[in-house]
Length: 294
Image (tube, rainbow, N blue to C red; front, side):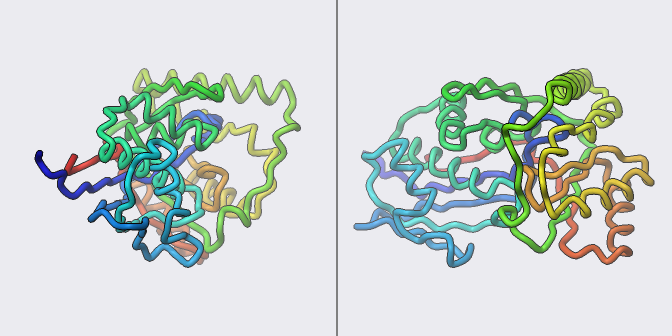
């Protein structure tokens, strides 16, 4: 019998909730979470430098996902390397879940389809946008009814990149929102804005799509210390003629989509404003999670 080689899984970062597309629209970015599956061991061991709050044993989210997908998988040593900041609305937990699904699929020779993988991940996350983008790449539109996810992958223009503006604070210190308070009018408007955004993307009408992205009525129901940063970046982006700035996953990262020239102008202006955090221009990841060595 041929011995299974070393498995390497690479998953892109994700940015979710583009404009009014809450829990539905996501995009993959070229920041990566990589897991190397090494030799079998008597107990699970996860080597990483992601911080003391991330477990190194069977309590790690990767391992918990592996065993949830296939409880017969034997312990291995895993090594994790990541460019994705933890707890900043860029899908750091999603990448761990997707890694677990991919590893279980490979080690267990399960032959799970991409749709099956998205469904498993969506059930774990309770929504599908990050999972779909991480697995498929590029821009995805999805819905999840609590059991089944339905997903469509599409492409944003090839010259569009993302400026990610990350403040020096964690997502869970930023976010507060009430799921029970939203007016009927705001819900209808948000739905129509999202519909037009998707239709414009599918028709390759980028300027029309971006005109919908900041009409995000859901965000008025969110209490976030990040509001000042979002408003500042939008104001500067508008001066450049860019209207595609949004709060990624309700986290402490603000994302602006545009051409490299536009984003450089915005980044330079933010630097002049002494923005307290990091500013990076990132390419869109056109491909989703990749597995080598299966």
